[in-house]
View (cartoon, rainbow, N blue to C red):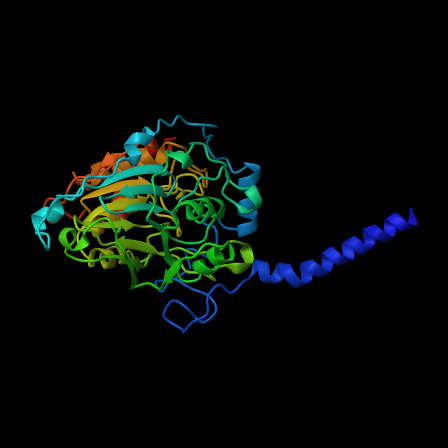
Length: 416
């Protein structure tokens, strides 16, 4: 008995020593070292438009208390379905490459505008965007749970594309390091299979590199050049190189409570011949000027804009870290995008709102805005052909406050 107790005590001492030497570094790593900027103080990143709205949960109290109530499910939130039906496209449809148009050298504006584009919402912030020369994937998450060690919110909607049916991926965009956006098991599988170019913002490349996944990281307002497939004669197809611009948004980052803001968060603009792709990542509104900054890089053909995880108390229409549908419409108008797909909803339960509330509120906000442009929910797993850009004129809707007042009624507050 004494020998057994001695072994147990020795094991506990070893574990304690390992915890003292390993755990602090693991929980609070410095993912990035570089010069001081308006959003990096040599230790941590920050939103230059202010962080007061992202520092604490909007319901008051401690962040730990908020998560504890969330995990216990005693915060009065409406019920979500355990599962929702998903009807993915057949693999043959996804594997079929879009036709490469025969164009001049360089392409004329009309030829570039006619370049085909197709998008498939996989769920949450994961979208497959296909062009004749590139298959682009945003924040890919195929895991059943989003959190450390396999814990965390469970998906209610299966991925809209099975991993084995996913076409070859050329480019992956990783917006930040939260588990519902940077999913290492998924990224390991795609990297091992396709060796895509992975572009992210500063510090997140260290997390990927530790998992054996190379990535290129850039600061806001910097860009990475994407090389086309060798089989495509790019000089007769594109009039300009494809660039991934890492652009500003308003969020925060952490893999653990202790490493908050050690890595940067971002949105992206991918320059494409028929009009740019904008991926908002995960974001609150902040000063809202980041939408215009992205639009200044060229006309946006398709925008991927979050609309969910905005409610952390009954009736709330937005939070510091997440835009709600009214603010999403404001972002859509600020981008001047021809088409937008709402993302970051209907897959993982991350907040208070009911399952259907984001989509219903988006429709109401679009009606209140007077916009007739394409910004409406799409079905998970169903490819959508993205229309060419037709003109640049776009009315600007009322500000987010006016839109929120328009849609914030007793009826909409009860929507689930």
